[in-house]
Image (tube, rainbow, N blue to C red; front, side, top):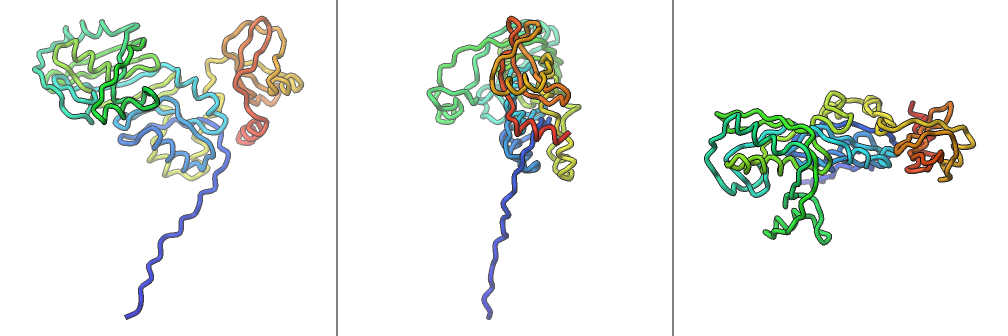
Length: 318
């Protein structure tokens, strides 16, 4: 009998390329934000990428992914307000505050619409939250979830957050509370659901979470991973928003060639500009994004700057 040779499939190394822009992904259930980022990065063959605002694996919705030059401005959307739709299961608390955890306590639910309205009013506006143990926040260089998995409870300081809007609809037969939340950065919706449950006297944990907006970006502009995968390479690139989409709240300033060159070298420029905390700077004529800055006393002070090669590459994709 002859010898049978088994050959392993040849793995071809992917050739990366410079990609600049923002892709709004409707993150699917079950993937971490980083897993979703790596899949899209592979689909685009992008050299450099990052995301803004982590979503848990059990959460879905708007996840802005930044590529190339856009990564320089990703912090702007980490700081943006967020809008969520969530579902909390009343009468049951878990170790993680969501459906992944083990049941900690069961309590009877005797809650009506008037109770929900009264309690929700307590959570609108500036509030303080104690971050959950199952979170990526660091303590002595270790993520809190590492301590939690080892059964160690770590003291956490309360943090100031703002709930700009909070609506709730009670599904009494199912003992569910459907929430709509608009909040500041750093707000944990799991913790909000737990705290509302405690204020209602029955406890609660989060069973569903969907981010419907972050800053000016919403679901209507987003694309699913499944749909993105089905597109051709050129169609995928066409889904990218330009880098300046991250700078919607900035005042635009144009500079001539000489001033633009000095600005890109980090040199302050003088002009008749009004004081402004957030400025997006463009090259005159080409409308090429050069970077960001701010204006104080008629001086344009550089902030985050694109490199000459990044400017050339972004212009080439228009």
